[in-house]
Image (cartoon, rainbow, N blue to C red; front, side, top):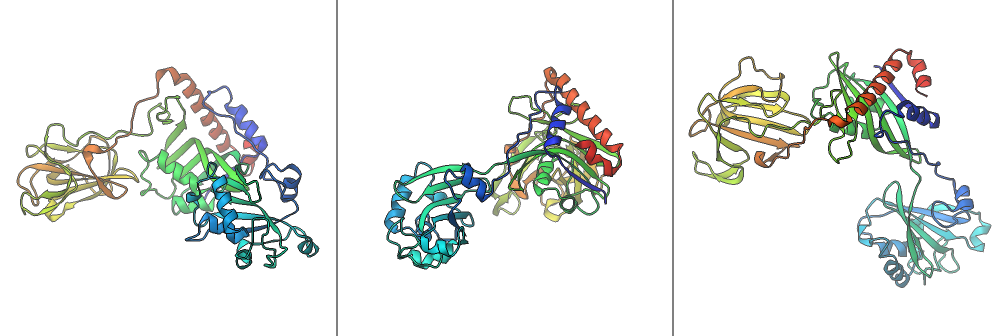
Length: 463
């Protein structure tokens, strides 16, 4: 299995920016931030929290099910009265109702002379002081490391992390206050080259690629690639921006350029923002990577029955769901697929008669019921194009006359075809064609230069 994964350091950030500079204003500069400072560095700079944690004891815990902000404060050493006052003081900064189970918090204590003699900067769990904290008289009388509420350490601050990056600092001594903080985030340009040997997910992970990139590619290529039908030997090459916090990947910020290779054919995807809030991914011809569905699978028809969860069936007279739209049309009228996709089923389904089912991507699938016959040569596994005839209107199965029962599923759930949102498919605006071509050419040449090098030298070339 051929898998390569390159991390661009500071030098790479500069080289890539220079490489793409001047091609288009749509390529943003890579932002850089310093790494998260150590506790000692925080004590010197106080940059992260807004207070000096250098000579404080920190105890870390997680929010448990059924726990409230006030109980969290009390468990950490505050009295009920002071916990209430702090909650009131910080209500414009943090909504205490948004406390989430599993999120991390850190309680910071000034160290008493007794506990200082046992060692500075000790760390423990906030839960260790829960029982002693219940007897605390005020926010200034927190529990010590040994659970001694009387004369114990003072709870000075509590930091609650809303996510991996963003947190809120609560000052737990009067005057009470709170403010928001954020850990430094580093954005790096990266390049991944993965050839499929088992599955996209497994091979990407084996190459050290974040699952977030897989999700981004699935979205970009949703209208081009059938991610359920990837084959051994298919290949993805991707330039993308990755955000990390303390060494952990928190986001794939932007996929800049990607090439999916399937059976020897390349399918490029180019990020180019026209600034209109619309589509930003295009193929090399400037055509949108997202494709619109046809409004209907028939050219000439009328709707005889709509989408309903309580329709009286015209044959059985029973009230039951009809999760499709019936189009009345003469027998033999051609039925077309509303979008590109793969035929997943072509068979008689009893009450549904002759049915063709098509999977368009990882989100949408459609079905065409009561067909009189199938298109010549149509078979399961065949890839069909938007507007291609797949069958003909009939009255097979449980039916009162010639019609097409058309159905659509989104993420496995039926939706009303008449209310389905079809993505825009407008081409790139002519005024941007020059800049777009320059970006395509720059990335294409970059990939060619990497391909020409031995694997061992590709990283050095990228850097």
